Length: 414
Ligand code: GDD
Ligand code: MN
Image (cartoon, rainbow, N blue to C red; front, side):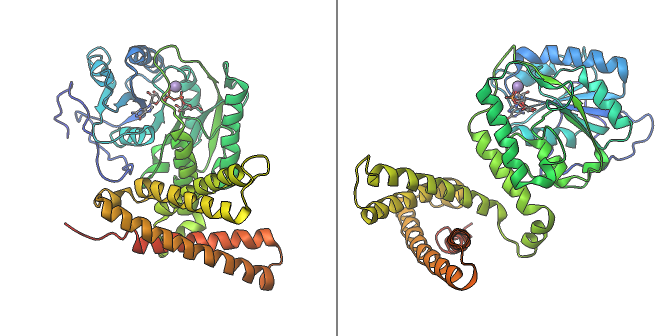
């Protein structure tokens, strides 16, 4: 490990996303433990990276000389960000670069960087200068004053966004509110849970296996880490000057997926689901697909049966929309929820078989839905909406479990 030539790329850690304890290295070893490791995840940031490295180095050389490292984790950007960053290392000896070729995604990039880090404090900052670098020293200070986690926040004093439209602010706050409902124990602890600019003590994360989806790595750190005290420092999220944002609508879906996964795998629910080894992740995806089906069903029902549109009879409309929703759900489940199974069984006959099974199981689910609804409403809780929710939950679990066992049965063929 200690004989790596100074100009080579960092090796990409593999296996579980787990941060190791800091191993005490002998004084004088060619690599030594340091105070602070700052990860800069990048994708197509060639026009930014030099500026970022220069400014960060200036600030850190002044406040903690030789006690820090910058780790660029680039996902094999087609613009050669990793190569360009690597060419800066002779000039900036604190800089190390990792080029990932087999994995993708912001959150896992950050964790891979931390896994290779030597610092007692682990940090992350965007590689596009939207996070003002001068806030770093304040974040370091609140950690040295005792915080386990220091978060740069847009929503405390001194914080803000530069010129976001009303719609963008609304979306951002809506996402936060949704998170607060699903995961109050995590989102409720910070004013800006979406922040991608923070630092955390290694001791709060060491030994914990992280399992993020998408962009919001801070949720993972608070949700799974041993974070006792949190401090926040205000910052203004600047506009991008070079390159472009990588955020797409998929990130919103990832975010919800991440929230639900954390909800089900941490705390009391997590203990239960671990004991019965329930495939939480798949179930979350199945549930999200189910929601998309409700949306399809509702929209089509309006188009077919509303008096202002086609005005078809209700039952006939519902049979059509229900079947289309089932087809919708099947396609998504086949391509996403059970992708690992379906890619191994791609023949159209196999697909058709899965579809028919799915269809029959979902129809049985509908029958179960009606039965449970009546049972609960008549004998247990005389409120039709609560009874319906319980019935939907029962049918969803049924649909998921039976489809898991029958439609997308994992047959072990080598
Ligand atoms: N390695 C890697 N892999 N880096 C990535 C990836 C990826 O798949 N996707 C994005 N990045 C890098 C970008 O190059 C940039 O340095 C940083 O991650 C943030 O990505 P942006 O696409 O610029 O995100 P943004 O500015 O729209 O969103 C930011 O919004 C939050 C505030 O709400 C996020 O970066 C958050 O970190 C930030 O706090
Ligand atoms: Mn950005």
